[in-house]
Image 1 (cartoon, helix red, strand yellow):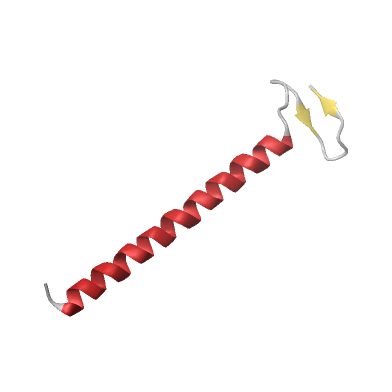
Image 2: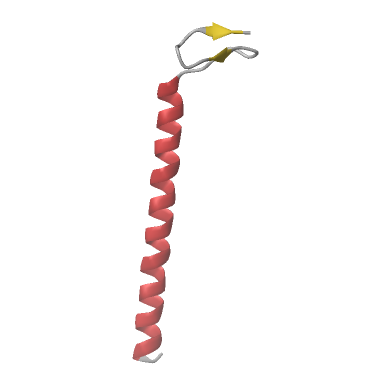
Length: 54
């Protein structure tokens, strides 16, 4: 295999690993924030003042 092709494949692998790492971090942060936000009962919404209404 030529040296250029080997370095290109290495760079490709590093880029793909970086993309999947960032996507994983985003998914974990979204899951954490949705868990911290809490769960609301179905049919109820919360307005900006924190009061629930149906």
